[in-house]
Length: 252
Figure 1: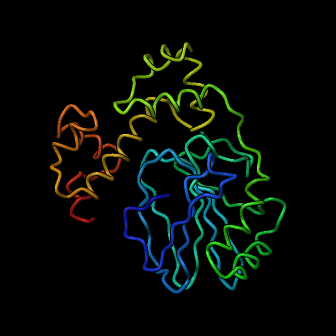
Figure 2 (figure 1 turned 135 degrees about the vertical axis):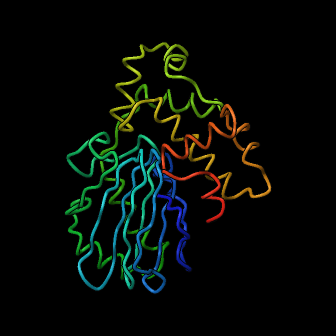
Figure 3 (figure 1 turned 45 degrees about the vertical axis):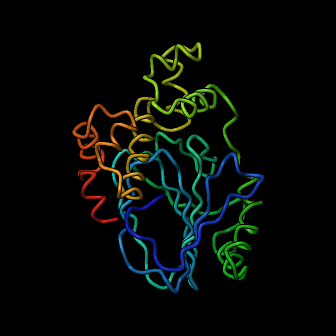
């Protein structure tokens, strides 16, 4: 759940445990002493995130679905936040809902891996360090059922090997699938169509470049990522977020 607002001081990013590296991209820990009461803007992405809110009171867990529009996620001063960022298409079966039912939404969990959230919260707070929190969480995440490998995984590998991306029809042809099958597997695994997936993935790459490469002109970024021109990239940003690339560059 990468937010465009700056992370609080003391935030730590942790690599996924080796046993779950194909399912998770990373974990993030924002400690209670650095958390603020705020609404963080999260822009469109194809990932699912598990957020655990930890404090001396009850532990809360929210599962956030993939996004096609910005979402504002609250945080509260004095509470710690442990976030698990799953890879696209790797949403575990933690709730009775599919990725398509969670697009632009969230659901609150009541337990995780058979453990009540209050018990889990106590164990995580007692762990003392982000690394030990990861050790507590790993076996519970390993128990969760994950989707079996299917045509989506083939399609994702193919897309990642094609920096310029592919239109759905060309992707289906390259994988010897019907367009209908390709649409179905993306809907089941990501929550939206392969065309939307490609669009959002390119937007994420453009946003990173706009914010992290200030010396590179917006026209250069647009050309490198396969947009027709600067104006095309700006239209995509406006349609997906309501803001322009320049807006995000100024706020970086």
